[in-house]
Length: 302
Image 1 (spheres, rainbow, N blue to C red):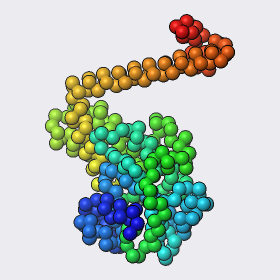
Image 2: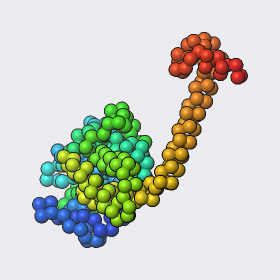
Image 3: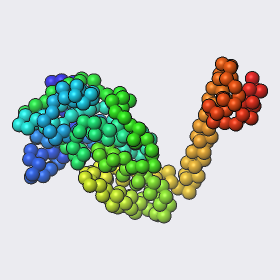
Image 4: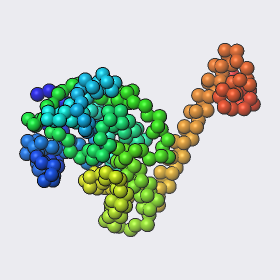
């Protein structure tokens, strides 16, 4: 058994969704029994170790790597009857959707995931809850790359510029839906938290909001909606109190001030370098986006 297959066996959820027949529906079973079924849940609800893409056409690892110029998947799981396949990319560090998650990190991961889905020409309607079980005899499984990927490595194969504007929601593909739901729920919870008096009422309110926001063309599985709502409700209940809110705002102000100071220091150092290379104060000011007076002040401190 390859390293990636062993990792798959050892990291599926303890009680995953699974089935032998998609028409008859999904059931929850313990992992040992589920690993004997044709389809199985491959990620935990609030933790994404694998990015899986449903390529709904005859394909091969060679097409992915040489024709599409994409990295070889860690696992390639194919239906031998029609050539359709699931391509698995295993991450070194899973993407988490919990109370300690960074919205910036989540959006970055989701952008990579969306870009990969488009580049691989994968099915955008794939729900992502279950995959072809790579350990099942009905599928042709190829272990293409034994080493997991970092998001940084994967991002080198796609163009993320279309997803850099954080004011815009990501496409409703893969982690794009998770990211959008997490952001919407977090922003709503941040505003509304102090209107609720008990923990139970608050958790129910957050879940209701998240459920109503799960109106994508291909909605997220209920288990993932519940996991996102639970993590958001838990964090906001603990931190968004009258005193806690003031502390958060104060810390954000300090971080913002440090960021502005760092940018100013960089501009000053770069301006002095350009002046030492013989560039005029006027040109330096235009390059650095500051006034000539600012450049003179920087020069006078040397």
